[in-house]
Image 1 (tube, rainbow, N blue to C red):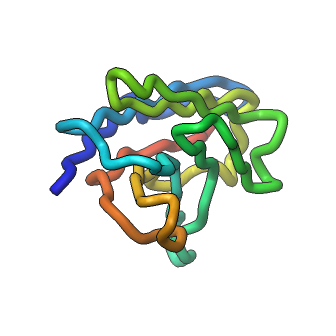
Image 2: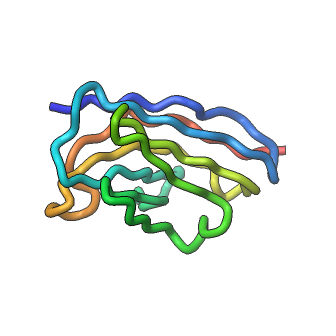
Amino acid sequence: QVQLVESGGGLVQPGGSLRLSCAASRSIFRPNVMGWYRQAPGKERELVAEMSDGGTTNYADSVKGRFSISRNTVKNTVYLQMNSLRLEDTAVYYCNVRSIYHSRASGFWGQGTQVTVSS
């Protein structure tokens, strides 16, 4: 089992920034992909961004140019820098880690952190 603990969520005004962090409780199997998903009320959980331990990234079209994912593979952490936040970015954000050989949304999940964008 891998436990993931997220932090960094909160309330921010439109156009503001937040940085989410996610730390794994132990060393992670390799090769792997760490990523961020989000779920807004009444909507399905969707991929926001992911990054393999080899450095390959993938972003949802809605966040390209605004969000940036990064990792520290030694510390087993993943970060999500969110800039130019919009009202529609409001959601619970979940950290995920999976084997690179398994499908998206498999693997282990964090408990989620709330991001609210509001004026």
